[in-house]
Image (cartoon, rainbow, N blue to C red):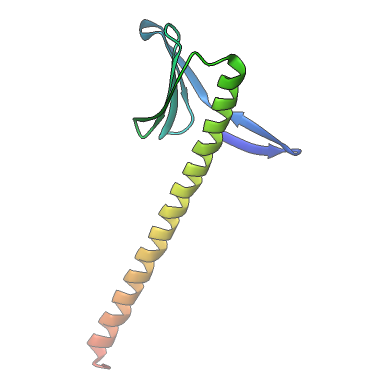
Length: 112
C-alpha cells in the first residue's frame, strides 16, 4: 500500500486481483484490510482481519470508488496505529530489561 502526499494531492494505491472462478474482484489494502466484490450478485464486503465489517449491495460506481478511497484511508490509519503499538511495546520491553539489569547489579553488589 502506498499513501503519499505529492504536491498537495494524495496518491492512493492498493492491489486488485480477480478470482474469475468465484466471480470476485478482491482489493487488498494491507494484510489486515480487504474489499471483496462479487461481480455476479453485486455484493461488496469490507473485511478487517478476515471478518466482514460492512456489506453493501449494487453500489453505483461513484459510491464504490468513494468506498475504496475511504477504506484505503482507514487501512492506512490502522497500519499506523499498529506500527505505533509495536514501537511502544519495544520501548516497554527495553525499559523492563534495563530495570532488571539495574536490579540485578544492585543485588549483586549488596547495595539495597
